[in-house]
Length: 424
Ligand SMILES: Nc1ncnc2c1ncn2[C@@H]1O[C@H](COP(=O)(O)OP(=O)(O)O)[C@@H](O)[C@H]1O
Ligand SMILES: [Mg+2]
Image (tube, rainbow, N blue to C red; front, side, top):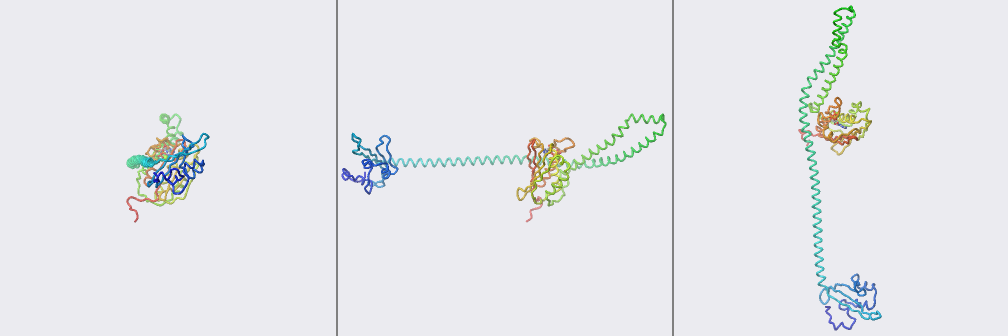
């Protein structure tokens, strides 16, 4: 195997020459010299060990690039022979060519490595695919949500638009009659005053008549029959109520007209919303002051292109609603913000009763109200919705029953009317 003829080695201590260029002890020599682990480590590094079955033997494997003209893997096993006293008298060392086994092992290892790598790639690909799938799923869910929102908004604006048209028609028809009803009531009140004065004059005349005058008796009887005293008292009250009712109708008609944007001729102007909020607060102060403390969280806002009086109407509706929602003393917080360079945001929060999901779903419907007759018309929010839409803005709501509500309005700073192309 080593390429050195046996007769050159047998009986000599030149065995090292088979494996190494320079003289050095072999495994058998080390056992014979009873060298310790340190010497073994020195010559064999970490490639040697003591076999479990014969602890005083030593085995090792080594690679020799040129052994008898070929590269070989060699397995050495050396074991001592002892006399009766346990003294080492000789060492048997076997040398075995394990090149073929090593080659098979190496091929096997390479195969295992290749398979492991393939598996790792497979797993990575599968994980990637799974991630992709999850991402797609999230995107789909998001898309679905958006679709749902868009559909809801579409239904909402469709409904509001058709009701708007109807409202404009109805408002137009009612406007005239309610106008003359109100003006007639005013005339009636005047006439009634005159008639009362006449009655008083007649009653003064009665005093001049003899008590048994049959005409006087007849008049007294008639007065009693028609319950004249009650009539005199009740008439002005009836008139007052009629006038109040007619005024309310006129107010609703005006709201309806606003709601349907019957008078669209308004110009867009640049205005600062904080000023608008302040003046609106002055107007509704009476509704708020006994119920809520107003907290102003104002930051500097740029002026925006808008219809200021309409936006004030929105603020008024929101502030009055907030005050209505509060029963025990509470707080209304008004916050301004600029979420991005193109938009401004106004939030109005209250510590009031909040809304259930069912109520929340319907608040923008015209005439939807949870308030008693006379306090709510159910038009405030549908009106506000229309105004904000016209400004290309958005209303968001957070509400928790028993805790409060926040209305958040986001408005673009700049309007771009559809019929005016952007300036070049
Ligand atoms: N800040 C709020 N807190 C609780 N509920 C509210 C609030 N704002 C509006 N709502 C609910 O929305 C309904 C509709 O409001 P709106 O359109 O202004 O009509 P109205 O105030 O005349 O009832 C109210 O009746 C109420 O139920
Ligand atoms: Mg309202």
